[in-house]
Image (cartoon, rainbow, N blue to C red):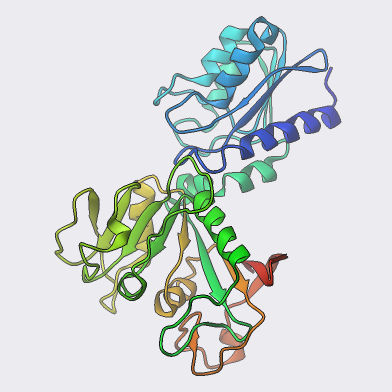
Length: 358
């Protein structure tokens, strides 16, 4: 009989496997699976890319007949519905496993407990909740989309010690060092989608691609553009990734770009909460917001940022330089936006600060 301590070790191994799919499973969750029999691993696997076999299938193929009478440790409840692949719960039943440990239930309402119920009905013992927080953290974007209907939003900042992101002239290349910029490319690959406003497109003509880093897919490129100002020839519209243009205007989308009509708020700008709901409907799990101070401030004040990742360079740009966010209406200390440090580490000469709302 597997003890809880042993089970935690096998689940931790499954979570490490799941992390291997960090850059390629969008919009699916990252899942790892370990099959154990008589105290030894007989099969393991992870979900590598959407549309391809799930983690359980890879593990069962490796285990073969060794799966019969074995215990399964999987980071997410086995699916019970037909999507692009058959139900994993049925595959586990056919394999003859005796127990399935799931780190967390699937927040997808198409599954949500039904996979475990199917296993239980087939006489397979089940446990859920082992290392649940770790599993949820690994799939925070997928959980956000399934429970809130919108992606998890990460605001990325590259700034000086005095909170400036560019000189008054707009010059900003480069405030942070090459190591920090390389880390941003990994962050883009991990979140799976990059979002900007029209000001960034017009001023910088960014590519919003992952470069210098091997990734199985390029992130989605998303432009929030109330009046459809982004030019058709902008590099953000180049082929190689899914491109989404959210606007209240009547612009004609370039070839291959999906135009999404979005509602406006009282000020006439895009309703940011509604925009995120549209992205959720388009199966966007997580977005990296790389934008100017106005849009950054709007997201912050609307309470729509779930995490801030700030790369802080050991330099001062002065009070005339551009701030990282425009936050109108803050006049008293009691009105401040309060965050907490969730992580601090050095990247080259710069600091990488991770902050989350209090």
